[in-house]
Length: 65
Image 1 (cartoon, rainbow, N blue to C red):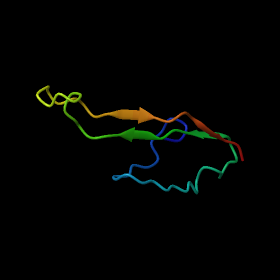
Image 2: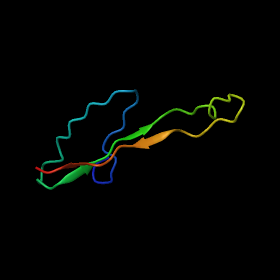
Image 3: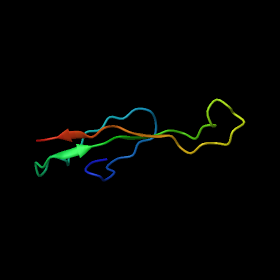
Image 4: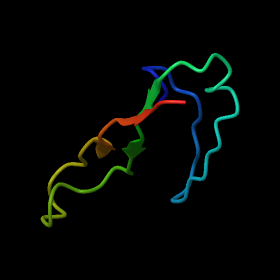
């Protein structure tokens, strides 16, 4: 996510991203990475219903050119 907009989505467990467009106007930008995991059974009790996707955001990463 760059300045509040999704700029790339990747399936899998690894991400390498080079943003060639961010520095065009030399304006400061910030990035956040959103990780979405799979559905999983509720806790360790596998008799519980399935929980929604797990989700995590990293702290903002500020970039000044």
